[in-house]
Length: 95
Image 1 (tube, rainbow, N blue to C red):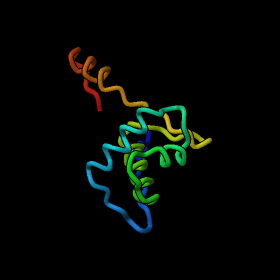
Image 2: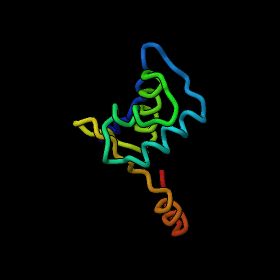
Image 3: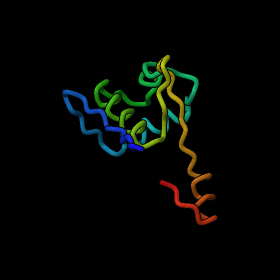
Image 4: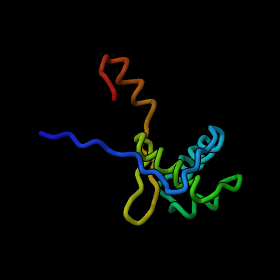
């Protein structure tokens, strides 16, 4: 059985977002999860962010398992840190 490894998508014109920008996007995505599309979330950000920087952050969040982007471009937050802490207390390894 062969394991597939998800690859991080990189943009042609790579943008390296700052940590505060990543956290701002995370907070906005979490707030509007399952309600808004990618473009709508981009327009709702408290500060302006370049589109390529925004998509780089979304790629990172998807790669790290915090969000999924559905076929209709709706962003859904799937990361549950409370549940992870609960599983760790029971001695289960969470990858």
